[in-house]
Image 1 (cartoon, rainbow, N blue to C red):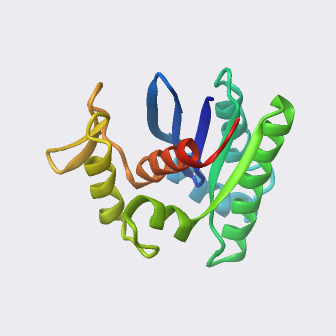
Image 2: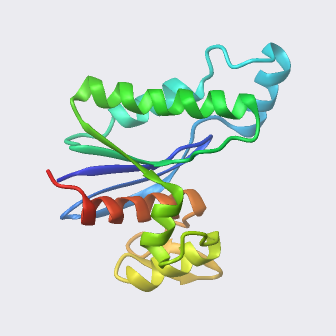
Length: 173
């Protein structure tokens, strides 16, 4: 069973895994300067470049069975809520196009799965990833890194890795 796990946002953490290992990282769907410029020029989210970028990234991964993403149930601004809804819709559209199964995981459920604490901090999530998956991840020079290629993981990629492990333990084919 091949799963794509996503921590959605302008910087989307991703983890792809099956029985052969884990590929993990972060897609920057739009550079921060472009986001700022877009807001100044148009003042809204029409034709937001993050949406097709996410769609193309998802569509470029072969042989998927599931897409799992963190189901954030809050937004501090209307624009943030619009972006979040657009990213979610993009995931559902990509899944529909490819006939994939989709699952959403509540943030506190993910944190409790990963650390045993539903209110875990980013630091706790990082520490537990390294502790419980030391064959894949390690601390080096103050950062969580992938063992096989030394890629530095940000908090989005760390959350995506936890989502993948949750899905592998929880979901059926």
